[in-house]
Length: 606
Image 1 (tube, helix red, strand yellow):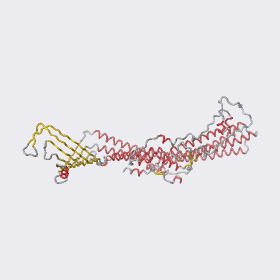
Image 2: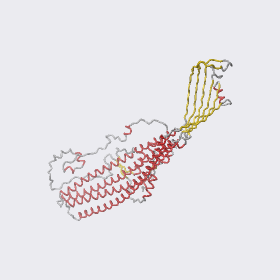
Image 3: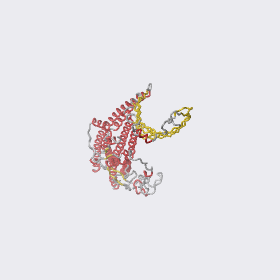
Image 4: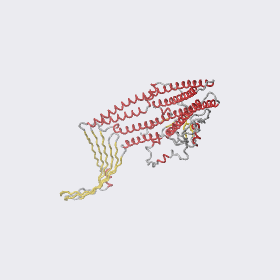
């Protein structure tokens, strides 16, 4: 269905200012926000802005014969209630009115530049520069940071503790044995001491829900009065501790739930970015074919204006020759000319309106909205009949629509949340275990030697902690809510499948309808052209140019122009309907040769 002009592949990997690449880069503060720098592309110096001539409104019949340049240089007329001294009834002699036949739509106004662009070029520039796509591209980068936040919970943590303790403890006259002199006793009234403790190590949460900690502690003790043989002494300990839940909070899947949900949210945001890309391309396709239809309308209006001009010349010539034409017929033609000139002005303005919208959606710095370039279509519209089976189109849509992919991820999130809630209903049973390797001596070197030699002392412990909430109503309520949300997500998926089927069915019907409409409009144009040709033949064969006949031919010209406009609109609508079908199937990017490597981004967070 796509023309050969779109053979090249556009890759939407930039994801708007490299949004997906923001995570993992070196941390750097963004530059200061400068609104003037952003506005600079659209600001135009007054000396470069094209000046539009706006003539004053006419107040008499004579004014409508002036050209726009004459009217612009002429002083403004007085109010309509004070016309010039022209008599109300014109003399029977013919008076020639200046007729300015408008130029072709491709002719630029002063200060403008016509640029004809293929649709692929428009789409490529939009993919690379669109502000709307760029804004949406930040969401996946933001979502990816949340994956790292969830994963960071399992990063190892280094800790360092230091403590100084001064002891000054009173006693009520306790008698103690002197450890250095046998049989000597002292009365302990006050115990004083200095204790220095330093501990460093690593601790880390485990994917199974437990926590492991390995540390090394050094302690210096000096006590008075002496109660031990060694005073002062050093006490070094190598400690290993582990805590592991066995019921509640146990298991890899339960403890990885936040990471999995964050990854799903990231994928949802990638699909949201794809949606923004599809929305922008769909609007660009619509604008492009509307621009093509607007150009055809200008050409049709110009041809109609030339027909009116030709009719006016014939009538004026016969009126001046004193034939069967009066001022009535000439004014009929002149009124038709002025009406069609006004319609042509509006048609030309519509081209520039649509062109500006295309430039806004492209956001290409080479084509600012306020620039002097006017975008015109280069590609001809497709008039090839497309035949397909609705079942195949629906199957394609079910496999490709991003809304269904997003809802599947939400269903997975709901299922994970329900599993976590089910796990939280279990009693709490934790296993705790510890192992200590200890050495003690009067100095630091001997302490370290004793710790790793024959004088080392080992101790270990093993224990269980058990908790059972009576009633457990909160956990049961959360579990019930989780499964209700899971069922709700499935029901929403069923609703989306029905909506996708409806979208595809209506889009297929619209393609068929616009094709049949295009066929009918073309046949109507043939018939109307033949009607006008018959009237022209009658005039060429000497048909009296009565006011009724003149109006009949002018109306036939108008009907032919309207038939051509409706045909051009049907052709544009047919091409828009094709793009709408591709969007309904979820294949609009592929249809426009835009490749978004979603699978690559799914693996970036691993």
